[in-house]
Amino acid sequence: MDWLQREFEDFYEYITGPELWVNIGQKMLTILLILFLSVLVIRVGKKVIQNMFNRRKRGPFQITARRENTLIKLLENTLTYAVYFGAAIMVLQNVGIDVSAMLAGAGIAGLAIGFGAQNLVKDVITGFFIIFEDQFSVGDYILISDKEGFVEEIGLRTTKIKHWTGKLFIIPNGSIDEVTNYSIHNSIAVVDISIAYEGDIARAEEVIEELLKELPAHHAEITGVPELLGVQNLGSSDVVLRVIAETEPMMHWYIARIIRKELKNRLDERGIEIPFPRLVMYSRNEEEDIEIPER
Image (tube, rainbow, N blue to C red):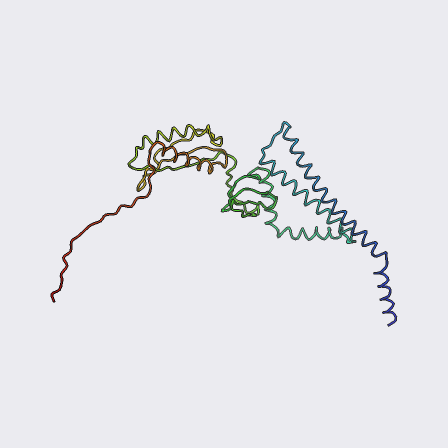
Protein backbone atom coordinates (compact mmCIF):
# COMPACT_ATOMS: atom_id res chain seq x y z
CA MET A 1 0.00 0.00 0.00
CA ASP A 2 3.02 2.27 0.39
CA TRP A 3 3.51 2.47 -3.39
CA LEU A 4 -0.15 3.45 -3.85
CA GLN A 5 0.21 6.20 -1.30
CA ARG A 6 3.40 7.44 -3.01
CA GLU A 7 1.64 7.46 -6.38
CA PHE A 8 -1.25 9.44 -4.94
CA GLU A 9 1.15 11.93 -3.34
CA ASP A 10 3.07 12.36 -6.59
CA PHE A 11 -0.18 12.89 -8.49
CA TYR A 12 -1.41 15.39 -5.91
CA GLU A 13 1.86 17.31 -6.09
CA TYR A 14 1.63 17.32 -9.90
CA ILE A 15 -1.90 18.69 -10.11
CA THR A 16 -1.30 21.24 -7.36
CA GLY A 17 2.12 22.30 -8.58
CA PRO A 18 2.54 25.60 -10.45
CA GLU A 19 4.15 24.02 -13.51
CA LEU A 20 0.94 22.24 -14.67
CA TRP A 21 -1.28 25.31 -14.31
CA VAL A 22 1.27 27.60 -15.93
CA ASN A 23 1.42 25.20 -18.88
CA ILE A 24 -2.41 25.05 -19.10
CA GLY A 25 -2.63 28.81 -18.88
CA GLN A 26 -0.10 29.25 -21.66
CA LYS A 27 -1.96 26.83 -23.91
CA MET A 28 -5.30 28.51 -23.20
CA LEU A 29 -3.85 31.93 -23.98
CA THR A 30 -2.37 30.55 -27.18
CA ILE A 31 -5.71 29.07 -28.23
CA LEU A 32 -7.51 32.33 -27.47
CA LEU A 33 -4.89 34.22 -29.46
CA ILE A 34 -5.32 31.84 -32.40
CA LEU A 35 -9.10 32.31 -32.35
CA PHE A 36 -8.79 36.08 -32.05
CA LEU A 37 -6.36 36.26 -34.96
CA SER A 38 -8.61 33.99 -37.03
CA VAL A 39 -11.61 36.30 -36.54
CA LEU A 40 -9.43 39.31 -37.27
CA VAL A 41 -8.04 37.75 -40.46
CA ILE A 42 -11.55 36.91 -41.66
CA ARG A 43 -12.82 40.44 -41.07
CA VAL A 44 -9.79 42.04 -42.70
CA GLY A 45 -9.98 39.56 -45.59
CA LYS A 46 -13.63 40.40 -46.23
CA LYS A 47 -12.78 44.11 -46.25
CA VAL A 48 -9.98 43.44 -48.76
CA ILE A 49 -12.38 41.48 -50.98
CA GLN A 50 -14.92 44.30 -50.87
CA ASN A 51 -12.28 46.93 -51.68
CA MET A 52 -10.93 44.79 -54.51
CA PHE A 53 -14.31 44.72 -56.22
CA ASN A 54 -14.92 48.42 -55.52
CA ARG A 55 -11.66 49.28 -57.28
CA ARG A 56 -12.59 47.00 -60.15
CA LYS A 57 -15.70 49.11 -60.78
CA ARG A 58 -13.44 52.02 -61.74
CA GLY A 59 -11.30 49.89 -64.05
CA PRO A 60 -11.76 49.11 -67.74
CA PHE A 61 -13.07 45.58 -67.12
CA GLN A 62 -16.62 45.61 -65.77
CA ILE A 63 -18.79 42.78 -64.46
CA THR A 64 -22.48 42.79 -63.66
CA ALA A 65 -23.65 43.49 -60.12
CA ARG A 66 -25.27 40.05 -60.01
CA ARG A 67 -22.03 38.25 -60.80
CA GLU A 68 -20.10 40.54 -58.46
CA ASN A 69 -22.34 39.67 -55.49
CA THR A 70 -21.98 35.97 -56.26
CA LEU A 71 -18.18 36.10 -56.44
CA ILE A 72 -17.96 38.16 -53.24
CA LYS A 73 -20.06 35.59 -51.36
CA LEU A 74 -18.02 32.71 -52.74
CA LEU A 75 -14.65 34.30 -51.89
CA GLU A 76 -15.82 35.22 -48.38
CA ASN A 77 -17.02 31.66 -47.72
CA THR A 78 -13.79 30.19 -49.08
CA LEU A 79 -11.72 32.53 -46.90
CA THR A 80 -13.77 31.64 -43.81
CA TYR A 81 -13.41 27.88 -44.35
CA ALA A 82 -9.67 28.13 -45.03
CA VAL A 83 -8.94 30.28 -41.96
CA TYR A 84 -11.02 28.13 -39.61
CA PHE A 85 -9.37 24.98 -40.95
CA GLY A 86 -5.92 26.46 -40.35
CA ALA A 87 -6.97 27.61 -36.88
CA ALA A 88 -8.21 24.12 -36.00
CA ILE A 89 -4.86 22.60 -37.08
CA MET A 90 -2.93 25.10 -34.95
CA VAL A 91 -5.15 24.46 -31.92
CA LEU A 92 -4.62 20.70 -32.22
CA GLN A 93 -0.87 21.18 -32.52
CA ASN A 94 -0.90 23.41 -29.45
CA VAL A 95 -2.77 20.76 -27.47
CA GLY A 96 -0.10 18.22 -28.42
CA ILE A 97 -1.91 16.13 -31.03
CA ASP A 98 0.20 14.87 -33.95
CA VAL A 99 -1.53 16.65 -36.82
CA SER A 100 0.69 15.21 -39.54
CA ALA A 101 -0.40 11.69 -38.67
CA MET A 102 -4.03 12.79 -38.62
CA LEU A 103 -3.71 14.44 -42.03
CA ALA A 104 -2.07 11.37 -43.49
CA GLY A 105 -4.81 9.17 -42.11
CA ALA A 106 -7.45 11.62 -43.29
CA GLY A 107 -5.97 11.54 -46.79
CA ILE A 108 -6.23 7.76 -46.97
CA ALA A 109 -9.72 7.81 -45.47
CA GLY A 110 -10.75 10.60 -47.82
CA LEU A 111 -9.58 8.58 -50.81
CA ALA A 112 -11.69 5.66 -49.67
CA ILE A 113 -14.71 7.85 -48.92
CA GLY A 114 -14.33 9.66 -52.24
CA PHE A 115 -15.33 6.58 -54.19
CA GLY A 116 -18.64 6.53 -52.35
CA ALA A 117 -19.15 10.30 -52.25
CA GLN A 118 -20.21 10.64 -55.86
CA ASN A 119 -23.10 12.95 -54.97
CA LEU A 120 -20.74 15.32 -53.17
CA VAL A 121 -18.39 15.40 -56.15
CA LYS A 122 -21.35 16.01 -58.46
CA ASP A 123 -22.54 18.89 -56.25
CA VAL A 124 -19.12 20.56 -56.32
CA ILE A 125 -18.65 20.17 -60.08
CA THR A 126 -22.16 21.46 -60.81
CA GLY A 127 -21.64 24.39 -58.44
CA PHE A 128 -18.43 25.31 -60.24
CA PHE A 129 -20.13 25.38 -63.63
CA ILE A 130 -23.09 27.39 -62.25
CA ILE A 131 -20.67 30.09 -61.11
CA PHE A 132 -18.35 29.84 -64.12
CA GLU A 133 -21.18 30.04 -66.67
CA ASP A 134 -23.10 32.67 -64.66
CA GLN A 135 -26.33 30.69 -64.92
CA PHE A 136 -27.76 32.68 -62.01
CA SER A 137 -26.34 34.97 -59.36
CA VAL A 138 -27.07 36.23 -55.86
CA GLY A 139 -30.20 38.38 -55.92
CA ASP A 140 -31.75 36.71 -58.98
CA TYR A 141 -35.32 35.43 -58.86
CA ILE A 142 -35.25 31.86 -60.13
CA LEU A 143 -37.34 28.71 -60.32
CA ILE A 144 -35.75 25.30 -59.70
CA SER A 145 -38.28 22.47 -60.01
CA ASP A 146 -41.02 23.66 -57.64
CA LYS A 147 -38.68 25.87 -55.56
CA GLU A 148 -39.08 29.56 -56.38
CA GLY A 149 -37.52 32.65 -54.80
CA PHE A 150 -34.53 34.97 -54.60
CA VAL A 151 -31.02 33.51 -54.55
CA GLU A 152 -29.48 34.17 -51.13
CA GLU A 153 -26.20 32.32 -51.55
CA ILE A 154 -24.39 30.16 -54.09
CA GLY A 155 -21.78 27.73 -52.83
CA LEU A 156 -19.80 24.96 -54.44
CA ARG A 157 -22.08 22.39 -52.81
CA THR A 158 -25.47 24.01 -52.21
CA THR A 159 -27.62 26.92 -53.39
CA LYS A 160 -29.90 28.81 -50.99
CA ILE A 161 -33.18 30.25 -52.28
CA LYS A 162 -35.47 32.42 -50.14
CA HIS A 163 -39.18 32.33 -50.94
CA TRP A 164 -41.22 35.53 -50.58
CA THR A 165 -43.00 33.95 -47.59
CA GLY A 166 -39.66 33.63 -45.76
CA LYS A 167 -39.01 29.94 -46.40
CA LEU A 168 -35.37 29.16 -47.16
CA PHE A 169 -34.71 26.34 -49.61
CA ILE A 170 -31.25 24.71 -49.48
CA ILE A 171 -30.77 22.77 -52.71
CA PRO A 172 -27.76 20.54 -53.51
CA ASN A 173 -26.20 21.75 -56.74
CA GLY A 174 -26.08 18.22 -58.14
CA SER A 175 -29.88 18.03 -58.14
CA ILE A 176 -30.29 21.20 -60.23
CA ASP A 177 -31.27 19.96 -63.68
CA GLU A 178 -33.26 22.91 -65.01
CA VAL A 179 -33.33 26.57 -63.93
CA THR A 180 -35.71 29.36 -64.93
CA ASN A 181 -34.13 32.78 -64.33
CA TYR A 182 -36.57 35.70 -64.26
CA SER A 183 -33.96 38.39 -63.56
CA ILE A 184 -31.90 38.48 -66.75
CA HIS A 185 -34.31 39.75 -69.42
CA ASN A 186 -37.25 42.14 -69.29
CA SER A 187 -40.56 40.83 -67.97
CA ILE A 188 -44.04 41.03 -69.45
CA ALA A 189 -47.02 42.25 -67.42
CA VAL A 190 -50.33 40.78 -68.58
CA VAL A 191 -53.58 42.49 -67.59
CA ASP A 192 -57.12 41.43 -68.55
CA ILE A 193 -59.89 44.03 -68.30
CA SER A 194 -63.60 43.22 -68.64
CA ILE A 195 -66.15 45.34 -70.49
CA ALA A 196 -69.91 44.81 -70.30
CA TYR A 197 -71.67 43.44 -73.38
CA GLU A 198 -73.84 46.56 -73.35
CA GLY A 199 -70.77 48.79 -73.58
CA ASP A 200 -69.15 50.23 -76.68
CA ILE A 201 -66.07 48.03 -77.22
CA ALA A 202 -64.55 50.34 -79.85
CA ARG A 203 -64.79 53.34 -77.53
CA ALA A 204 -63.37 51.32 -74.63
CA GLU A 205 -60.39 50.38 -76.79
CA GLU A 206 -59.79 54.05 -77.67
CA VAL A 207 -59.86 55.05 -74.00
CA ILE A 208 -57.50 52.22 -73.04
CA GLU A 209 -55.00 53.00 -75.81
CA GLU A 210 -55.05 56.67 -74.80
CA LEU A 211 -54.16 55.69 -71.24
CA LEU A 212 -51.46 53.23 -72.29
CA LYS A 213 -49.59 55.97 -74.16
CA GLU A 214 -49.42 58.04 -70.95
CA LEU A 215 -48.13 55.29 -68.63
CA PRO A 216 -44.39 55.16 -69.61
CA ALA A 217 -43.98 58.84 -68.71
CA HIS A 218 -45.22 58.21 -65.16
CA HIS A 219 -43.63 54.81 -64.47
CA ALA A 220 -39.97 54.34 -65.35
CA GLU A 221 -40.26 50.57 -64.84
CA ILE A 222 -42.20 50.33 -68.13
CA THR A 223 -39.67 50.04 -70.96
CA GLY A 224 -42.09 50.80 -73.81
CA VAL A 225 -45.65 51.75 -74.62
CA PRO A 226 -47.99 48.97 -73.43
CA GLU A 227 -49.98 47.23 -76.14
CA LEU A 228 -53.68 46.46 -76.33
CA LEU A 229 -53.97 43.06 -78.00
CA GLY A 230 -57.75 43.17 -78.39
CA VAL A 231 -60.56 40.86 -77.34
CA GLN A 232 -59.11 37.94 -75.42
CA ASN A 233 -62.27 36.15 -74.35
CA LEU A 234 -66.06 36.31 -74.48
CA GLY A 235 -67.29 35.54 -71.00
CA SER A 236 -70.76 34.82 -69.71
CA SER A 237 -71.38 38.47 -68.82
CA ASP A 238 -68.35 40.36 -70.14
CA VAL A 239 -65.94 40.94 -72.99
CA VAL A 240 -62.31 40.50 -71.87
CA LEU A 241 -59.63 42.75 -73.36
CA ARG A 242 -55.96 41.94 -72.85
CA VAL A 243 -53.14 44.45 -72.28
CA ILE A 244 -49.43 43.59 -72.16
CA ALA A 245 -46.54 45.78 -71.04
CA GLU A 246 -42.80 45.13 -71.17
CA THR A 247 -41.14 46.01 -67.87
CA GLU A 248 -37.77 45.88 -66.23
CA PRO A 249 -36.85 42.43 -64.83
CA MET A 250 -39.08 41.32 -61.97
CA MET A 251 -41.28 44.44 -62.14
CA HIS A 252 -44.20 42.88 -64.04
CA TRP A 253 -46.25 42.12 -60.90
CA TYR A 254 -45.95 45.70 -59.68
CA ILE A 255 -46.74 47.22 -63.07
CA ALA A 256 -49.72 44.88 -63.57
CA ARG A 257 -51.25 46.17 -60.34
CA ILE A 258 -50.63 49.77 -61.43
CA ILE A 259 -52.23 49.20 -64.86
CA ARG A 260 -55.34 47.60 -63.32
CA LYS A 261 -55.79 50.59 -61.02
CA GLU A 262 -55.27 53.13 -63.80
CA LEU A 263 -57.64 51.31 -66.15
CA LYS A 264 -60.36 51.14 -63.51
CA ASN A 265 -60.11 54.87 -62.76
CA ARG A 266 -59.99 55.93 -66.42
CA LEU A 267 -62.94 53.77 -67.47
CA ASP A 268 -65.00 55.11 -64.57
CA GLU A 269 -64.16 58.66 -65.63
CA ARG A 270 -65.35 58.00 -69.18
CA GLY A 271 -68.52 56.24 -68.06
CA ILE A 272 -67.56 52.84 -69.41
CA GLU A 273 -69.06 50.12 -67.26
CA ILE A 274 -67.00 47.27 -65.90
CA PRO A 275 -69.42 44.33 -65.48
CA PHE A 276 -70.21 42.62 -62.25
CA PRO A 277 -72.02 39.35 -61.56
CA ARG A 278 -75.77 39.66 -62.02
CA LEU A 279 -78.61 37.44 -60.87
CA VAL A 280 -81.89 37.54 -62.75
CA MET A 281 -84.94 36.12 -61.04
CA TYR A 282 -88.16 35.17 -62.81
CA SER A 283 -91.40 34.95 -60.86
CA ARG A 284 -94.38 32.96 -62.21
CA ASN A 285 -97.78 33.19 -60.56
CA GLU A 286 -100.17 30.30 -61.10
CA GLU A 287 -103.73 30.04 -59.83
CA GLU A 288 -104.57 26.73 -58.31
CA ASP A 289 -108.03 25.50 -57.47
CA ILE A 290 -108.25 24.60 -53.86
CA GLU A 291 -111.00 22.19 -52.98
CA ILE A 292 -112.54 22.62 -49.58
CA PRO A 293 -114.04 19.43 -48.30
CA GLU A 294 -117.71 19.49 -47.28
CA ARG A 295 -118.66 19.02 -43.69
